[in-house]
Figure 1 (tube, helix red, strand yellow):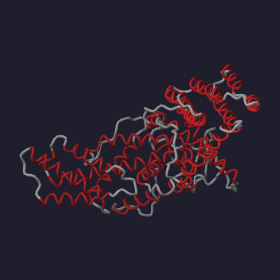
Figure 2 (cartoon, one colour):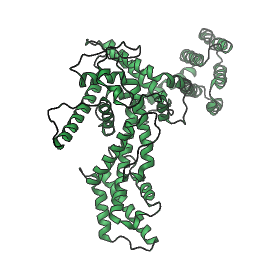
Figure 3 (cartoon, helix red, strand yellow):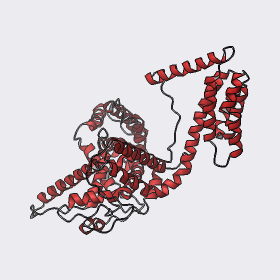
Figure 4 (cartoon, one colour):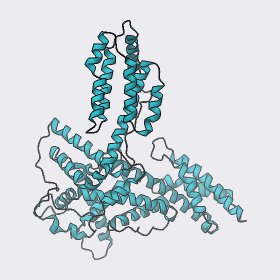
Length: 511
């Protein structure tokens, strides 16, 4: 299955979400959520509770695998199948190496007998024949007939009985055929095969190169399949997920809980605002916006604990969302460092050209791998603070200004080190502003390409924030397109449970 390696994975999602509807709350009105209008063919239908058999569970798992793979192919332009060898020192890798060596040693021993024993070699030729035939396109009858004729197992077995097998001739034919069928990238591998003299080693290397050719063929198929999937991905994913839901009625439990938590957060926030407003009627029930509830649910994913299971409707983008969360954490630290440095040193460096970028470039490498368990953030911040003090002093010295004294350096380093502390005021401030920017981004209509205004304190990371924000918005908008009808059904039940329930097909707004 083929792939293009140079496109942006999220640009595909963004292009797919061009048709996303506007962000007006009218799309999520009480009337639409209680509608009993006829369903659309691609919309989800409600399913009564039922017992799930093992076969049904396995069918749902296969559907999920197909859905995840199709989604990855369509939205990730860099997705491809790679040839991976097990680590040499791993248990599985060691066992595999021992078994393979035993097999090839046994084959070599058989071929060195007098007369040679060809049975295992014949089975290898039969396997090679099937692999070569699998590379052929429909209509390649001439080469297909030739492969079947030359690698005819029955004929080779008859020749073996009379000790008349030309095993080197068969191997050379296989290599020449592989050369005709392989991608140009494998030409050097084919040359190396032709230079291999030992027949057992040659057969072993033939299988290795055939594995590489199978990988190439799969990636080529992916490349051809991607445009089709991109055009049809919304309907495909929605249909596949509906199949999963029919096989496993509990397949929306985590999604329902995710939306329920967002509703509770909104109710709590609304309650706090009402209690702080003089003359507010505390007995009135808040009228929550379904769009706002859903958007706030998406915002929670940027602070999600990915050690616990993500909502089912977001599994296909779990890795991308986790990477965005980690990138935002890194950007938050850098913004905190720059803000602390500016406030501590003062006007002497505020308008220094490129100093903020220098501080950012210094911090980025030291924060690489923040997501790893072995990463020591305190140690990284200490190293960053030392570099920051050095750069600030250099900048002050170049302009003939007094450098930071020991007390000021210790103060600066202490404030940078305190970023990791819970409820650190600078960290909390930057975090709120990042959340505000991302929330503003979700509030924009999906067709609007401009970015919201960057909050104060984030200008040093503006370029990176806009890039991360565009990736995040693409994921969210596409997810709404696919799963909007499912979200509509859940939100209708949770927000308007006292009203007559319509069918699950009610369309959710795409923004």
